[in-house]
Image (cartoon, rainbow, N blue to C red; front, side, top):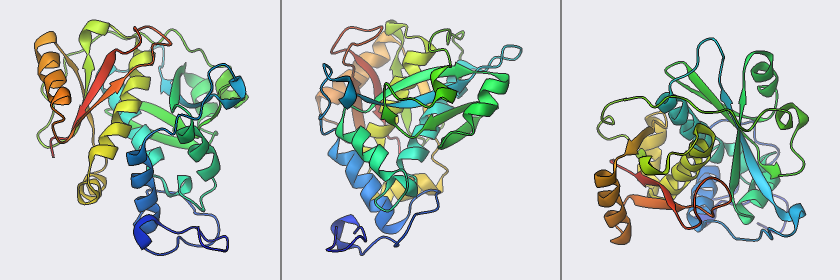
Length: 270
């Protein structure tokens, strides 16, 4: 920060605009901050024994009863929504979401997925966040906040009941970043959604700035695929070798999987 109230972008690229930022994907100094903050990772300030320090990003999956979405495009919508929120200028210094978002990054960057349909979904769209749609399947990522102080329009939504049949989307498109999910863990869609959200964040952190700009220009396209044991072994080897453009999410083990499990591995094919 400067000696006044105008936030300054990382790397000396000049001040961000004075006053509230209107929203949309960040550019310039605002994007510099979004990128560098994700590269810095979690500050680990959360104390699990003190609920007041625990923060989460709500994610809502649109799961209409009559016409349920495909599992893969829904998870791709989650990835796009989380990416768009983390790169929105409103989370940068000077934006109205900045304090809540920065406090979440300072904690453990938890995510909690819920489901909605009909009027519930329409009501959820009134809460601050970003929606993405892939092949008619929609998900919305919301501004993070205290885990025990969720907007009631979201807090009343069901966390369970998010199972969807596995599909076969085929190989990922060339050049598009991929978040690979360990098939053997058999995670529910809700759990997988949270992990895919983590995965796209580490993916952004792996990108250099020029690559990030190209990815934004390409519409933040992300493929999500399940990896069979052979493919997962290849990916895990790349993680161990610190291959460029490859990053893994290690789960804390609060739900569904054992602590220390690698749940997703993000690979930038670009």
